[in-house]
Structures are given as structure tokens and as C-alpha cells.
Image (tube, one colour):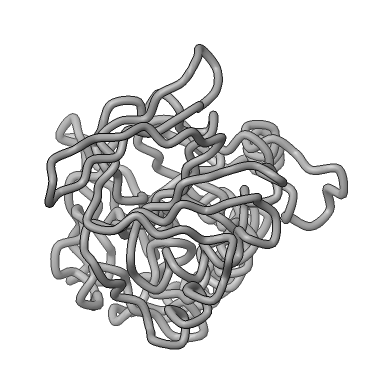
Length: 312
């Protein structure tokens, strides 16, 4: 059984993990970043990013990720493709169990494993992801200027983001499986008063349809009548929840009722030497900019912890 030791192990290779890797490696910490498949996270499948500072003309998600990876490697960050099976944070040295019967031991850990949008699981959803289907109105709304879009969900996020979309789009068809929204009353009032939002009640989207490269419509089924109809659209936004990628953590650190990791303003979890940053933590905003900021703080906090660890 292989057992390797590091100063710091970062779990997750999205913008949060890569930023933490840049800061930690630049501080000359012996750092390993673990990513299940390839670095990038959700940014890797984001077609175009316009709201990340420093790129006034925008930048593609893959290009931004490649820049981050190149910068991290410049400071000798080690990056390994592996899947974390479980963790043990009970001792002074934290243990991380990987596939292939391998164990990592490290003085500190930064969990930056991100979160994943909850999907509908219907035909066409994966096919048109990034080609008309989005999970972020703030990110992608401007790309649908003067277009018709469909939005799915009935909670605060779905309603608030639908209102935001009306700044750009021609029409939002908000589909909800019930006959009333779950969002806060003030958001409901704003949505009902917005003539750019049409509500499709008691209904679900059963498929997304289109050509080779673009979304053109969605099949919507009324749950009460059983009838299906085609809604012609140029884009779709799905807001039915988000799932933190924390299944490997178990009860090793304190998490909230939704599975997100609780941290303080130094990105410290309930376990000394274990930090969390980015979408995996309980945060009011999940954007690349906030993930990067979180990770800078987490890396500096980890560096200070390691210095004290070595002194003790």
C-alpha cells in the first residue's frame, strides 16, 4: 500500500483548487492537487466567461483553465488524476484514501471539490449543455439578448434568476411542476408583475430538442392532463438545486443540512488543518471570482497552520 506525505493536499482542480495550488506552491509548500478527471471543474465546460476580471473581451472556460494550470505548473504544483474515496482527519497528519489502494498523509488539506447542478435527467440535457442549456443566469444571460428562453424551477434561485434574465431576453417561460411557487413572496410579486415572464404551471420538461449544434425547443408535459407541447426557445436555464461534491467526506468535518461545508472567514472547517474553498462551502454566491478569493484565503490560512504545525 503506497503512502506518500505532503505539506498540503488540495482536493479538487477547478478554479478554486488551482488558485489554492498557485498560492501554496508559490509559498514553496510541497503541494499535491488531486482531481478526479482533468483540472477545470465546471469552468472547463463553460463556453464563454465575460464577468471574470482582467478579460474585457471575455475568455472561454477552457482557455481560462489552461492559463490557471500553466501558472500553477510554473510554481511546480504537482497535479494528479485520482479519485478520493474517503478521508480521515482524526490525527495530526490527515489521511486521504485514493483509488488504487493508495494513502496520502498531509499536514493540511484544502477541500475545493466544488458542487454540481442538479440535473433533470431528460433526453438532450447533456447534449445541449453549453450549447443553449445553462445553470447560471448571471454567467450566461447576456448571451441570450432578445431571445426566448425557458427556465425550470420554483424556488428563490429560479425566480430571482428569471427576473435577472429579463434584463436581456425577450421572454422567459418559467416551468414549475406545481401550481404555486416556493420562492419568497417578494420575489413572487416581482415575477408576477414582470410582463417578460410567462408561467407554465403543473408541468415538467421531458426533453430538449434542436439541431446539431444548438438548442431549438423543449418538450413540456402537463402533469395534470398528461398532454405534451413543444416550446420554441433559444436557451434553457435549470434551477432545481445544486449538489456539493462531498460524498467522500462523510462526517469528517461539519456540514450543513444540504451537505455544504461550514467554514469561518479564514476558510477553516471544524477540524484544525482542514480548509474549504469555492462552491463546496456554504456561500451566498458561487462564481469563479468568489472561488478564487476563497482559495487565496484558504491557502494563506493553510500556510500559517503548517508553519505552526512544524514549530510544534
